[in-house]
Amino acid sequence: MVSNTRRYDEIAAEIVDLRTLPHSEAQKVKGAWVELDPALLYPKEVWMALKLHEKRWLMSLAAGMTSRNAVLCGRSAARLHHMWVIGPEDEPLELALPTRGTSAGRVSRGYVYRRSGMRPDEITEASGCKVTTPFRTFADIARYHGFVEGLIAADYLMQSGYTESQMKTQLFALGRVKGIATVRRCVEHAVSDSQSAYESLARALLIDAAVGTIQTQAPIRGYFADLLIDGWLVIEIDGAVKYAGPDAERVRQREFERQKAIGNLGYVFLRFTPDQIRRDPEGFVAAVREALAARGRRVPTA
Image 1: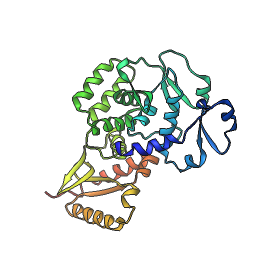
Image 2: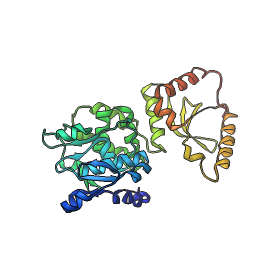
Image 3: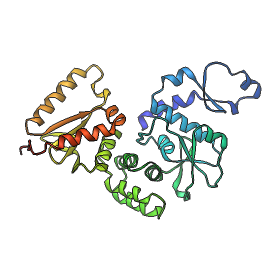
Image 4: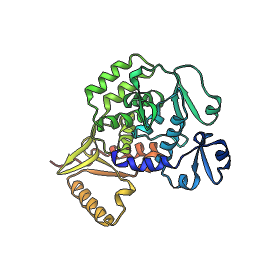
């Protein structure tokens, strides 16, 4: 994320913190604003130009900036760590408190307070806010949001340099907390070679559906398949960015030649966009199941 630091600094620089303004100046603030928090305003025109993940990051930052005792956790902590997150459309802000108290005002604005004990070494800082550590963040996502989202976060940790040994050591340190079985399952299936959150999403859905043996970045005659099911069904996840820009046609041609070469060996291709998988996960799994039903028709050549 080092290369994106400047971009996020630019986003944060647009925040108007009413708490830092003299009362007379705060009263004069006018124009079209988005209220990140009653004390934090953001220019509406700039807000509308932000990408969804940037808006989620900004909302998490605002929650952290205006929290005294609360610690950002779950998806909100993941946003500030720049971890992979594929949450729901109405993703709430998540915080953990050392006490059992809550803020009625914040709950009404969509905040969720988690009741969970936390060791001091499970709290760190990101973008100047108190957040759970990356591993604890992943664990909470798995505990509160299930295996699919948990595996996406676990893959991010592995892809970012966490070793299997480190994952298991920190898993053991969690103890017998609620949802530990899901955390353990995510650690068991996490890989270090996932290339994107959507590859991890697709794999998690297929693991949950028990569709077959799944390989990541499987080598096939000099090529690497995003996912390879049962040794012959290739799943490719293509984002729009891949086919944008001045070299778009060349990229398409190269992909066509790649697919043709692999297909000539007896492999079968299924291609999906991230949006297809996210919006219709059941349809994605059904399409893979349907293809696997024909597994006896083609056998890849050596």
